Image (cartoon, rainbow, N blue to C red; front, side, top):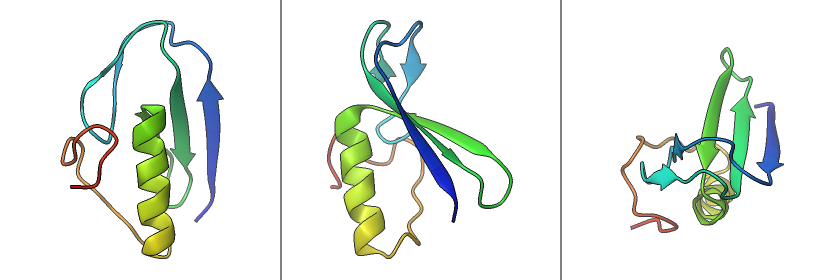
Length: 77
């Protein structure tokens, strides 16, 4: 899997977090994660959601998938 993470200092507009499906408010910091594994897909996550996602990916050996909005903000359960 090839991916690239860009930490954006300030959101220019509101986005939805791909982990918790809550708003990433304009002016807040977020992680933009692009995956080039099977085509290109981009995810935007709150910093705390990105860190939990990274922990789960390490635990599962990067073979980890989730459904948008299936976890609470910054949590796995």
